[in-house]
Image 1: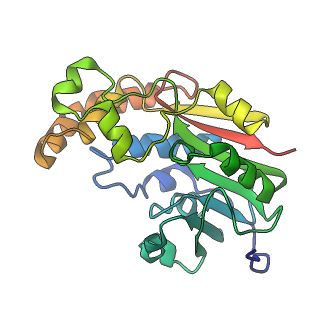
Image 2: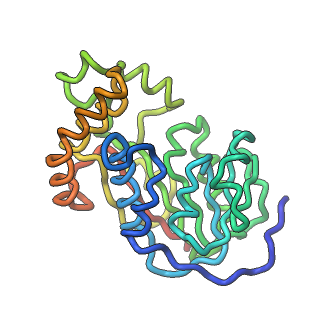
Length: 255
């Protein structure tokens, strides 16, 4: 088992504007706009309270938790050892650990908060991954999750099929072992009270998402994403946290 470093000062989450400005996806205001939607949903569900010890499971090379808590000491665990060299994992306040979500190398009740963003749909034994997360989470601690939901499919609309890979091709390319989860399925899997949730990538903004992963050339994708920007931005601003979306960010608290 790994032991944690001495207690550090607690850290609050970043203001929304500062967090969104750090969108790590290329071309964040056009092809990477869907990642902005994800970041906003995650920010919406994150408690407005400081955390001391934070674990991100499957954080890879995005560094999302470190962006969300810019002053925090973050442990980022991922199965791919190559991600240790990613810039986000080279920060002094980030400790990268190569490990398995279903066998976390940490002692019981080690963390105040655990982040599992876009992870569970990739893990064959999702029950074990959740069990391990709850084992290392302290009583009263929070588990934050994002995952596709029952509305996810690729492409979302039939008229996009001529320029997009098939649903099955994308599932394989992204390494999904399951499509996603309804909120009820997550409740059954986690067996904790859901404190709040927020959907993202709605039926309008999903068009831009699917263009971003289409077979079009990079230039064509950029042009179409730019042309769609007024509609994408309007739908983004009008989207309510519990309106229909293709993915869900959710917050759970351990008793």
